[in-house]
Image (tube, rainbow, N blue to C red; front, side, top):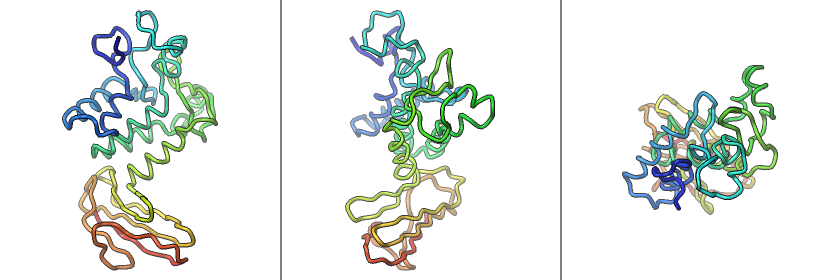
Length: 242
């Protein structure tokens, strides 16, 4: 019995498999793009502002996925947005170089976007300043679920800082690997490392979506596009040109 199979009456597609084909590196190159396109077509609900975990939800079929089938179709894991999975979709989009879609979906699932108007806030019903673990689809589309306890808040931070803005820190090395919309002209990051401050400016004069053409620190060119971080209390100026 398979879940996320086109042969199924319910749960024909599951976002975790679609996203992690890219994130894990296990998917063939063409399958990564096919998988993320299927996710966009079947799981992104722009009207409700959610990225569903699976579709169609479990209800009457013989498939037995466990406790999630006890949820009303469209709530929590059973066809609603389970926010961990939504953020993994954003990360996969960024990894594939689709900066526009990564930013679009990041904004879409941002809790503040569910409370722009009084009508939207009444539908959302939970706090607009914390990440909800889940948001309902189906007949309750757009209603927030559990808040204040989810680890998906840290995943959202990771998606924005590391995979979209491209600030990568590994051991004591800093790299800039952006995946952004082509119409972004520049952005800046202030990064504190111990007692040191790194003021980073990324300039995109050529309208690119990814890749760094040059990297300087205090006006000096950096080889291999990597900067060794130093905890010496100084203020450094980094400029990356795409």
